Image 1 (spheres, helix red, strand yellow):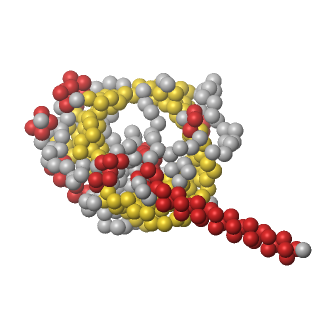
Image 2 (cartoon, one colour; image 1 turned 135 degrees about the horizontal axis):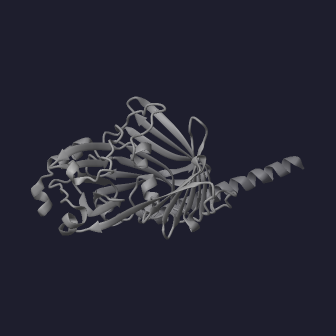
Image 3 (cartoon, rainbow, N blue to C red; image 1 turned 180 degrees about the vertical axis):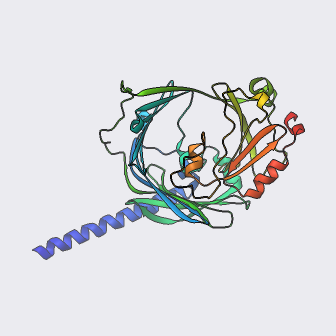
Length: 366
């Protein structure tokens, strides 16, 4: 009798596994008609698990484990980050008046007025809102099927048609289109970064956490006005107080998406965005001369050296964007025509150098 039960259990398991595989193959065949659909915005209500970020550099590799909970329906996220003094809890709320960032370990809440929390494509380093442009600059290959943290995934590889861009591999969970693992390789084929879920629960009830945006009475509250708006080059001098410089040379496939004004308090900066549908090159500019700067405005912070191992225990430069601390980027800093210019991207360094070399005062008037 026991043998019969065991055989029935094995038979049931085999049928289930075979059916699951057939369903995966069928889904893959449907999507392979246009596999780019798998890179559209993820569809899920909640997410929780452990995310491991591994950065590979000439000095070796380093890893960071992050505990994550997200409530997509209410635009709320909670992170637990490792710290020498114990895990640090960070909670964010996206509300109509801006983004709240809670730091419970410091009893502090920060409200960024007029700001929005980064989208999934910012976190996963994959742009997915310009698919038609991406198709003309990249090939998308279906590599097979694998499981990540117990979930069935389709493995895709984004290969650039123009050498100089990184290569990306993506493990996508088909029902939600959520990337459960992403790897980025240098233009030379060396792995630079891996972001993967080691544990994950999708659309399951979240535990009771700090998802109530009511600030405790004994906390310190800081309100930081933040503004980002698209501007035309003809408006730049009036809005920014200076005329931004444009690159007359761009990498193959890249176009200028737009010029944006970033303002915090009385400080204004130009953010010029170039993209080829997947990759992004960001160019930040602000006056370098003291006469253009208010007394209380700090200079543009020096970014961390790309692919470097940060000094243990040393604080990052003040104002360094969080994404620069987590993800390896290539960064170029120049002083051009009284402007501090910073180029940030994951394309090859020679392209950034060539873009900076092509920035001349006369190009801004075109």
